[in-house]
Length: 507
Image 1 (tube, rainbow, N blue to C red):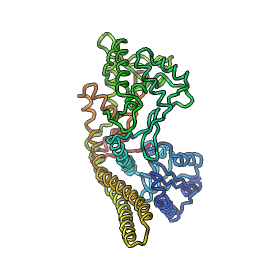
Image 2 (cartoon, rainbow, N blue to C red):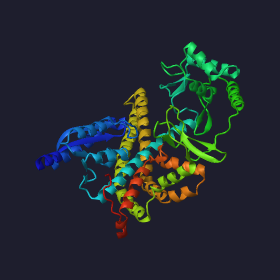
Image 3 (cartoon, rainbow, N blue to C red):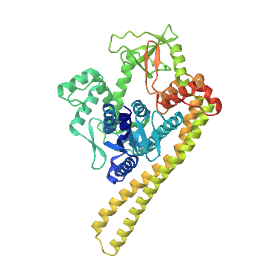
Image 4 (cartoon, one colour):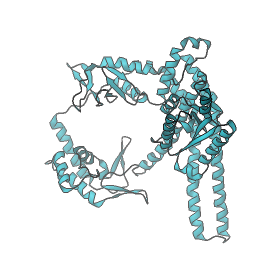
């Protein structure tokens, strides 16, 4: 048995990942990782039984080879060693860390010179958890640049998303153009509703009879889709972006006057129904029923008491009604769970400062590589320009190649700026998260309902509500902080020595 256990520790799998198709095309990352891991395996006496490679964006779900690796490890207990370059190559989120930890795998972070296993010290596991948090933070920092580009495009009148029905995205010149046949249907829908003689259901029926499906493929258009189209200012030449109405560069399908008349019909019908504005309930939109999955809504009874209950949209749910005060106390406890005591928080900040040196080295290496590539492109441009002046190359060749190099130059400058920005915010962001965790509970208790909901939206993704009890799902990185706080609480006596000792970080 001992021989089999030792053999299982000699069989290893390798995992390599790049974060985009562009990195794959550059041809440096995957081969470099595989060479590093192969050399390490040979040196340490491991037999590599399988290699797994993912080439896709780390923010997107569905890393097929990562999932295949987990499945392989589950089905082959004789292999229990994972070789990977470093922390941020292996984990996309904290759930990945927990999943691998449950497999009782031995993880070798080759570039970091670290080995994690069941026998690792709790302090080592704790610091590793911090690195998982920082890897996620770095990905988020890089993704912000994409959002900046979309905001800039919107500010100039370009719609940064997929065009709505009636239009199509022209990929050749990155514009949005009218689809004439669909646009004719859209125009008639607005004209019908503007008369006030047709309901949404009437227009839906007309669309079905004439074969217009509103971009839904084989499915008939729904009433909600009809309403969405009729309330979309895009068809009058504008679009909404982050709460603002922006004049678009695209061609309008209808006039602004027709659009306004349609909105007036909507307003008039709402007044006729006598609908009142919904109350601003504290916990609206935060929960789903744990029994049937429907949304949890709120209502006022006896003029002053707020009760929450399942909408029972699917029917058959017997979840009861619960007072807002009961939920408020539970949400307060949910916020309290991420609170770290001062000693633990200071210790984590110190760990962040120590890990900053390693992350800084990674950023600096990336910046040095990008700077060298940028200088190479500049030299090519300068040399080609001199060759053009000397008549060694034609004007056509110069125009073609200089255009390609200028595009590459712009890409490198943009990527270089992203790395420099992420490097500067690495430590500050981590410490700000910890400081929020220290004071979130006290802030929550003092906030009015609207601010409480805003804080909960920051901390939580979605919660289930069953039998009057709330089961929270924390957003990253607060899911990690909740685990930290719980471990620190269980080991409070050890904290008197000045450094908290956590037992099993992932167990």
